[in-house]
Length: 179
Length: 308
Image (cartoon, chains in turn orange, purple):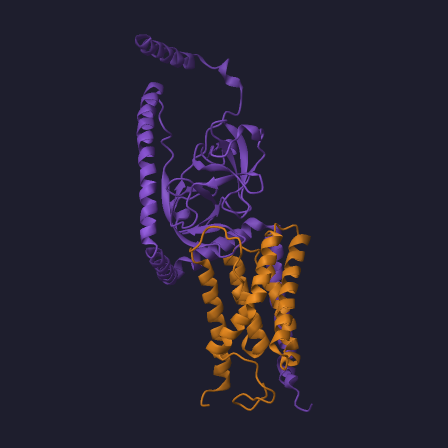
């Protein structure tokens, strides 16, 4: 416990940014350039949601904004919109984390799934209202289901590899402040 | 609840909320500007990709290489089976080679008779695929050639054999190719023996459907599909694929280019064709042009005479 708590927070932020960046680059590798029938789950958003539910103090909103805006630009999405929707969703989720602390995992999973649905619906609604061309609905729904289905795996890997878990009640950080 | 965990937010809460609001506003403004003035923001996007992706090369190339190595290794396990398949394929290919040689000779003869000169302006620039779109909804790849190499929006990109897509978005060092399978890709095509014109509209599958076909009865599965020069989108007669009948009874095109692994793409320089815009000046044209026409007609006749 020599290190200052502020360093640990930054470590958390940096590892979130690093993982997000790595996922983004992995997605852009020119491995399969043919269209696929079943889209891969969107690991990017599941990582973010898992992180926000578990340790909201380690994912400042600007980290989410930067990563998702970069993804918007690189993945040819309408710039800014998806990041704004995700930012709002994570902010709402962030306020619920106190209530979610003692939830069993199944319920947490359902909350995350609902958040994913809300993000998709909100995103597509705005695209629809502004007459922006959209991705086919079937593919989007498939990807939504895949992302929700793979959430436990993503959360599990994060927990095992990085020790990312919900702090227990009464747990304090190194400075003695309650988490 | 004397020690409410939310207590710590009391100091930073308002400031944080304000900052979140500002960031949200910026993001929304970006989207609105994009919706209103798309080309400018797309240029900004191209510039960002231009800065960002080539500098990731050191990381992306080894990872791609390693993963491809693993896939290749897996394919070694099926080597015997593959060998047998290849041998069978080779047999068929030999037959085709014979046919091709005969056709080539015939073609050469005919061309000689016809005095055709192939379009000398149709040269190409070869680029390496840097990255794909990264999203299951978009079919596009990023090439390592850009405005620096003279790439222009709208040029056609091919792999060795078939058409792959068209350039949409050019940065200084990179350019994006929208593949034929992308939902926003529509190109004019000609279906070969019957010569019918149609539109090939991508739909996120490897076999895009044919649309606006005048008479489907004249088209049979197996027909060759080439690009048509309509609307000056592409140079004519680039091989696109073969007509197949999809499982939904629609006519589709199985693309000839190997979309499974696009590594190198050729971007065809297309200078556009000259077009005739006005009807006028033939009758009232000045004397010299008749003088030019006269001798050439005579020489044509003199050349034609010995043949006949």
